Length: 188
Image 1 (tube, rainbow, N blue to C red):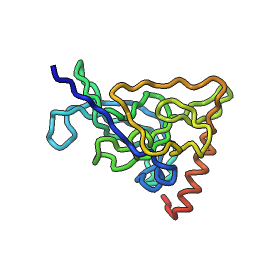
Image 2: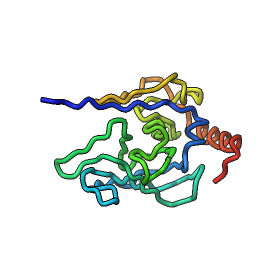
Image 3: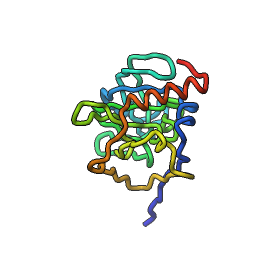
Image 4: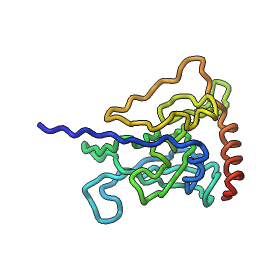
């Protein structure tokens, strides 16, 4: 029996690189996900999933009320197509996304899951920032701090937030994104 070994390796970008490489930076709520055969180019060998996001805020790119992210992978019936390192989305959850080449590349986020941040309110209702593995982002310096690269193994395990560790408020992250955009002289 032959088994495939599959992994993705991504260089972890800094916040400056996330901002520079994104076509669109937006915050929004996942309204739904739809899996279909093919990518719209006539191929029916792969499954692609469209994640519909109701946009609440655009930092970079054309303002839009809705974004349809087209991702490789998904499930139709009992057939599942898995792309290692692909972001996972929850319907009803809020995300801040650094989108790149939507509809043109397998994973339309900057550096795959590095371009995905989940927003979760704390017990006082303050929206807080978590990375794609559900780790709290505790400092702006934490973005891109891991040297070299990060590997997404064949089996993904979602980490649980550590008790007592508080993620930064999303408003702080938003202010830093705006600062970097101004510094890079990039507007909407």
